[in-house]
Amino acid sequence: MSERRITLAIASDLQNVPLVGQAIQRLCSLTSLSDIESHQIALCVVEAVNNAIIHAYDREAEHEVQVIFSHYSDKLTFQICDAGRAMDPNCLAPKAPSPFDFDPRCLERLPEGGLGLAIIRSTMDEVSYTTTCGKNILTLTRFFKSCRIDTTPLMG
Amino acid sequence: MSERRITLAIASDLQNVPLVGQAIQRLCSLTSLSDIESHQIALCVVEAVNNAIIHAYDREAEHEVQVIFSHYSDKLTFQICDAGRAMDPNCLAPKAPSPFDFDPRCLERLPEGGLGLAIIRSTMDEVSYTTTCGKNILTLTRFFKSCRIDTTPLMG
Amino acid sequence: MQLDQRRAGDVLIVIPLEDRLDARIATDFKEQMTELIASGHTKIVLDLSKVEFIDSSGLGAIVSGLKRMGGRGELVVCGLQETTMTLFRLTRMDRVFQVFENERQAVSVLGGNEKDAAT
Amino acid sequence: MQLDQRRAGDVLIVIPLEDRLDARIATDFKEQMTELIASGHTKIVLDLSKVEFIDSSGLGAIVSGLKRMGGRGELVVCGLQETTMTLFRLTRMDRVFQVFENERQAVSVLGGNEKDAAT
Ligand SMILES: Nc1ncnc2c1ncn2[C@@H]1O[C@H](COP(=O)(O)OP(=O)(O)O)[C@@H](O)[C@H]1O
Ligand SMILES: Nc1ncnc2c1ncn2[C@@H]1O[C@H](COP(=O)(O)OP(=O)(O)O)[C@@H](O)[C@H]1O
Image (cartoon, rainbow over all chains, first blue to last red; front, side, top):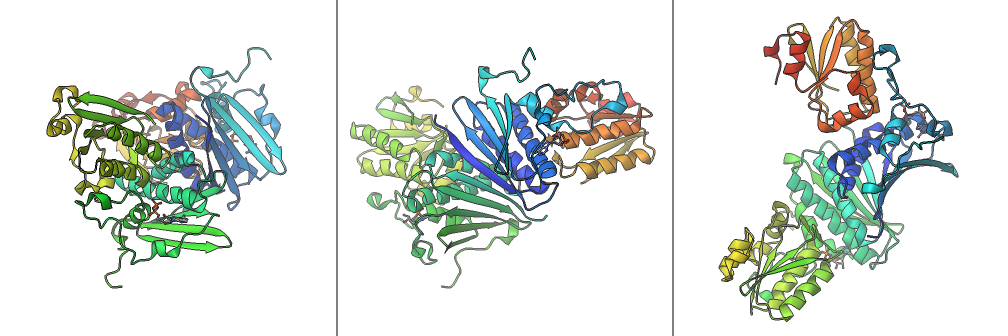
């Protein structure tokens, strides 16, 4: 099947994010992904859109966040686009320690935030980020079936 | 609840239309509408997007069709936007004969086409069309619950 | 688009394997139906149980098949889901087509061989 | 956001009535949980059976409640749907929280009065 594509766009208000989440979940469920996988992927897109609103736009409404859903024969890609402050590339550095590596018995150290990107990285097969002409694009890729690639390479 | 809004955009290729249909159906099902109502409304949006691709753009791909979904406390609106050839206003004239008024026994006269706008008009509460600066907007409105208004007035 | 076909006596059962009968595939669907009718089938059951969504072009293709029969044969539909039944009702095509619950009932009324039809 | 509350002996059952615990309402949810804990409740069952979707902010708010308990009491969760359980597992929060199937089991383990809890 040739590529099929749809762009979802919202104003940067958190009230609109469930609309994106629900639409993405339905679009994913049209593919060979299971309902749980579709839900997990929709969660990643919601995390990315929340980040764009909260971090790139400082919670100011009336900016725009776009999500481009592309359906290829072997994969889905999601491009989350904003025109706000760019993300520090260290946030996506491959060697960043995972916030999930916490000691479950050490109450005070449990993470209350900073989980979004880690959720995205452990669910998607590829995550990349570019900034061009003031437009930031976070690209999330998920391959179908056996094509899944581990995001953490065995050797550094 | 204040207004929530999402814009869906596709290239004018019929292959992309199911993406819009599925997304709209899911968005409708977040409201108080039943599954069947959501399906019927998604059908109307699909009919309108098909029309934009087929009639406004003469089936040329690579133009854009937008659908703006707005959720208000009392209603949903759908704005289907294209930048192609404008529709003849007579197509939406209130007195146009309904293509559903056929004689079921007269085989040769059964309608094989021309049903899309009639489906839209009998499902939605309000239908309007405007062209401004080369942009055509078909606006479909559906009120929730008892607010439903009949589209055909009793007197002409 | 893919159309499954099965015989039950002199009745031909046609099963579209698409979940959407829409403008993308309506022309192809119409042409395939035209060919089947042209090749001499006069009793056709269109089993729509796999179809979740029909738009006006898909419906138009079905109507076109009926018209092509020209009263010289029968084209009936069966297995409509609630969503597609709603479209038949809205467009009043439920008064034009004989609508059956399943293949077995449709085949039986057309006088075919019931045991080849799925229930 | 709306939080339903019910007592079962000295156990407080808290039921978020939202289908999404997300960034829109995480702050409000966290504040309401903080108040309940500040007002002296030391055995809390968070019933997530009505919640279909939790994002990292919603999860953070739940973790925040547990941390605020400061080991002086218990905050357990129950009624997780398959989707939200997947999030607890992915983030390893299933090793931090006691997770029960339903209110009755959670209340029973916390030593509350089972008959006030829904199964
Ligand atoms: N779209 C973005 N634009 C700018 N900064 C971002 C963006 N996404 C993430 N960040 C940065 O990365 C950090 C980690 O993000 P995340 O893991 O989602 O957790 P959280 O949003 O809870 O802090 C954020 O605190 C922020 O500094
Ligand atoms: N978006 C549009 N732009 C231009 N013309 C349109 C548009 N939508 C509908 N029309 C006109 O109205 C007619 C009736 O449309 P419709 O009821 O959807 O049936 P059909 O598309 O099968 O012809 C079309 O044949 C076309 O001439």
